[in-house]
Length: 483
Image (cartoon, rainbow, N blue to C red; front, top):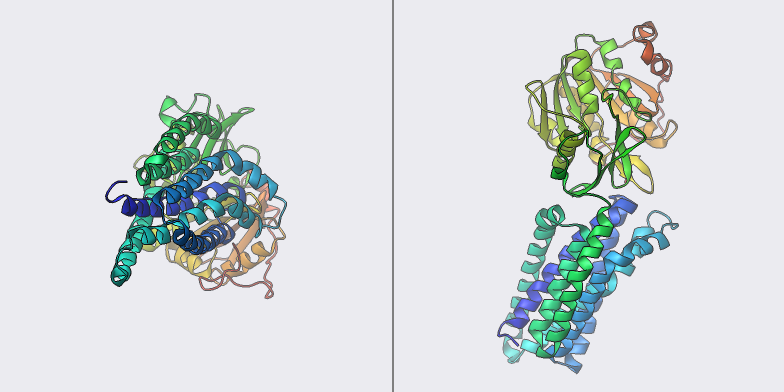
């Protein structure tokens, strides 16, 4: 056994454990959404398994204080992690019929409980193996737990800022498994052959797992231009991005939920299912002098391109996901210019940081939850956010927001009521999605606008009466009862 094999084992296992937690969240999010249920389940299960691992590890260490026995526990953890890419879909499908709050809990338990428990045995085992002087046991345990924590920090940052952006999720699991196989070999000469065999098996499995997962070409540079047939999956910080062509429509998905569609050969036309974007043009009927526009949520960029082509708008686009911007350029013929700018930033952070004001602000930001459908990020639903928007509107400025929900939902009623606490003049249009258009200073009678733009008549005629209802809460940063 190497001189510092125990210390290295504690460090590596700490790194693998936290990387497993981060990657576990990314694995479950496409199926259960990025909700507190997902992250609460993963964090809770790993903490529970760790606590049991500490207990079991302490008892086993007293009975069998041998490095070889610890290496066997680590080998078992490595094998369990290597299996995750091959069983996770079956596990998720098994629990998909449960209520939303329980599905991720049971899935996380099956996938992550045992490997986390086994890694939890490492620290007490390491203390027992290194303990020679009872009088120095406090310093020894402190040093080893510090090493484990440093490893955890490095594992967290590596998974977040490097691994997710460079490797497919199956290959990340295989990498973590390989690290544990190698660690087991460091601890015991008798485990070296098992470790080598495990790593060789991982190299074989990696090609199978990654090809099964990608479902297409994961390298956008392989496509020379936007007109080439698209079938691509790319991992990003905010989910799995997919572009695919079907029946003359190029569709863009995040985590399996379709986010936008472009008609191939007629790029500025609105694809079926995306007519709500035409609703934003009602803003120009209310204020024909609109020039400076802020679009929160770039997506494919088709909506911004249409406003620029039709109205000559000068547009700032804010998109939180840089890879979405890259896909918009490569697959949807989007390009920047002096009058079409893109800022990679969270929508609310951008508004907080800029002093610029606009004639029109469009908020078209939402994500897809497989269980609940399309949802608006919580921090873009509150009274404080709408005040921030209003502060960045010029006199007679207009705010248009896509509220990703159904016409009679409680969320729509709360959101409309929340907007009305900031904007006295707010109008709802059922455009397939629900669009609220609010003006900073003026009230409008929508009826005279009919006929000015005949293609928008169907939207103008569906403007609803105010839905103010005190039984639905106003959303604030302090209280937003949605997930």
